[in-house]
Amino acid sequence: MKPNTIIILGLLAIGAALVLLPFVWLISVSFKPHAEIFTTNVTLLPHQITLTNYWKALTQTDIPRYLLNGVIVTGSILILQLAVTVPCSYAMAHRNFPGRSLLFGGVVAALLVPFHVTAIPIFIGLAEVKLLNSYTALILPFAATAFGLFLLRQAFAQIPSDIIDAARVDGMSEMVIAWRIGFPLCAPTVIAFSIFSVTAHWNDLFWPLIATTDPSLATPPRGILFFRDEESGDDVGPLMAGAALITAPLVIGFLLAQKRFIQGLANTGLKK
Image 1 (cartoon, rainbow, N blue to C red):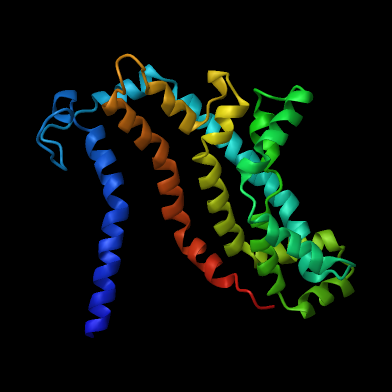
Image 2 (image 1 turned 135 degrees about the vertical axis):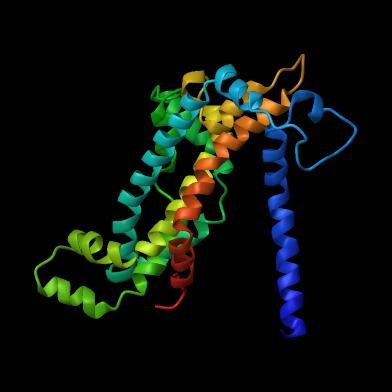
């Protein structure tokens, strides 16, 4: 093996270890008894494994409800995003209309605007129509996504025009072409975008903390806050166990879809 290859692999291994270390520590603490967590001796692996922290996490707070809320919110957001993004991305890639380049430039510019900038106007608008403290308030602001438009537009642009023209000759409407021809061909990119979307909104704490106050509507990150106590401090063991339960679905989902995820990113180029 060449020295350069060894150095590169070594740096990658160090980087991977640094990234994984917090997660390994989280799992380790979640299995430690309370006395072992608060000790002067730092050990990576627990001396005595206990499931008490997981039992407390499931009984002290309504984690199954938070996980269900997370599925409802992230799933609904993803469905709405695909319903809006797929036809719009197809139109920007394969339809000629005045201002198409300007519109795509606007989408790219929108990527530079963080959601926090628009949060206050959105909050005021939802308050005016009495939609705060509801699933609608958690879902509706994310129905359109500039990142999704950009990513899928690049994927649709790589579909040969001959295929699109042949579908038109066969009598397919533009909407049918977008969903029955373009969508399957762009499946790896769609899966990559879906992972990005679900991960971002599953882990989002900023907007649920603003838009809702009802504990029954708490999403997984907001549900973790219920472990906090201003007087007694954080109950670290159950807190880590709850974090592990909330992180597990994302890890499992990514492991199941990682091949398509990498393929989707590799196939999304910048050339038409």
